[in-house]
Length: 304
View (spheres, rainbow, N blue to C red):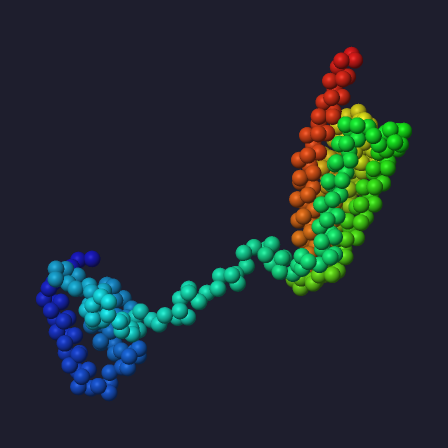
């Protein structure tokens, strides 16, 4: 904006002087500290709405900040109360306890869970143990053929391991359910809509699990390739044409739906553990299974 003439600034300072003299004469009309000043006094001192464009500019002009500094007694002096600056509400951020803020959804779930509960501990142990058990036993069998020798048949050995895995899965599901029942519910999930969502997830997961079983057969499902019972070709029918490892992800969907149907934050947390354990198992199983079929392909080439 263009600068204003110095003469007009002197007129403004004269207006300030007259206003101050009038304030001393009519002390009962002057506002108390922190109160509302008169309209003319705000206009002369630069306060109020639009103060920035009302302030004169040009040579010799003293800024509003410098004027306030002079009025307060200079640097280091105790600041005077001002309606412009406003009060220091609530002591600023010094009185804010940031520990009370929610960091993420997982933090909310942990608030409902008692990790020392025996049912919760049992659920964690069974979720972790089951994939560890069948991977260790299957790899041991693939290297030594001990189970096949004990049962005198790789098929009987595979059936025995499959039966053990099924029993362990039943135990895991039981511990999962007991852990949910022993912990509090989440009110936001305890409604008919959430129940229907959980039921739908349970249906989808069961579809993936059962269709995978029928596509692979018993020996294909329960690690028959580790016993030397290899399939002729890779299965590409449903549900393997939709996603890899559909049995694992179908099982995870089952647990997620079961947890939502029970409005259980403990169940949701345990479902996360199930998914993580399955992801680790996949990282170990897929390369090893690929190696088994590569060995089969190489041996077939040698025979031919």
